[in-house]
Image (cartoon, rainbow, N blue to C red; front, top):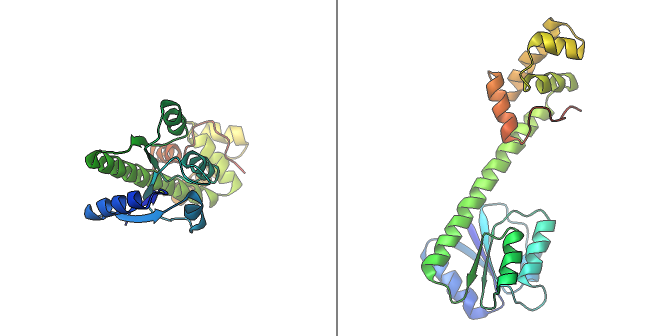
Length: 207
């Protein structure tokens, strides 16, 4: 189940937010400091963070920077009673999805949380697809990768053979292996997989 992490040094805020989230059928986990959240094991699932800015020790903005350095992709919604334009601009530039000022309307908060969870779910789906495609690419031999690189540029078998200085018959064999290992039946499908993996025609990906 998606989890909403509530990080706020105010006990009453944590309790009220957790109660609101539970009433909407959302799983929540509360932390009174950035250090407490960082001490937990990494969450392997869809989630978002409701994060206060001014807290003892590490601030919310500092936690956001730390998580970014560690490669975390969990969306952050800042929820604070001490916001200002400069702070909100900094937070949004660093990737925060929303910046809400206390007291916040419950409907606005829940709307922001559901948007953040949908966003993270999409990010994870894209990441999982990309990892699966790259895993298929790892199964290709160096020569098959060279052939694949030529294929996604639209090169025909003869041109590939001339470019790689191999026989057309050999190109056809490697091409068949590429199609089978990548799980596609056409160059168009292969090109689409490369697009999903962030690879464009002309990119160097041979090994």
